[in-house]
Image 1: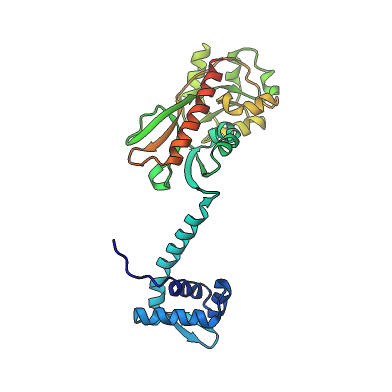
Image 2: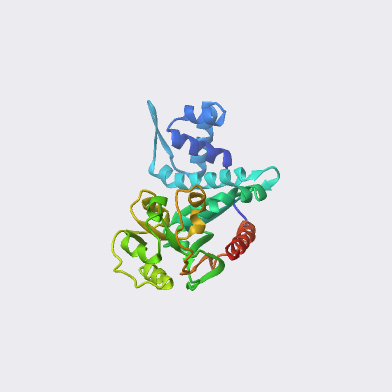
Length: 296
């Protein structure tokens, strides 16, 4: 494609003047004289055959023609500036957009990100969290990490690791639990997945009691309630190892249930960028280490 000549100086002068509604302030920003800005804008007006500003006694008022031109210029200059800023030390910085379940982000991913930054300093990771419900396309994500069975339509999913659930509670509540059946007499904090507590009681050989009480859409929030003595939680100990190591939480019984795995996901239609491939290899290695830890 052969592009027509672009009067970049005139376009830059107009864009700055339009933002400031002042030739003087635009000139200060561009490190030129006020007369130079005015001249460049006049050249652009002559080329387009329209008036872009109405000159007022105290400043400028942009015309409809100017308003039509301004958004395209601002977007173009912003994109060029963003691209130039991505070059650093002979490398181009790449942006990687990752969405993940909040529990995994806090309990597993964040403690490992220093290693990722050290290995890949030219990848800018932009992290957002969710409660396992996310629209990858609508949010413009490169990857997302979800909990489930891996069967998602139009999704390429790579398994990371399981995160088995177990009873977690404060030490004071743990002292009241001498056998698994004692859990049935506690307030049961639960997630929106209704089969978790019945599954745990069945694994423990206990008839499940009626499951009532508070429902949480995040294990992080559920555990915070447990830490405040609101009841016992059924959550993955792997994600709360810091609280367990600090003695804030206890796992009173070595009884576990698994309801799925964490998966690294991308749209099948999404082309894999170098940054995406580097992240995939890195997180696969971290997941392999975690799987080995769970087996020991």
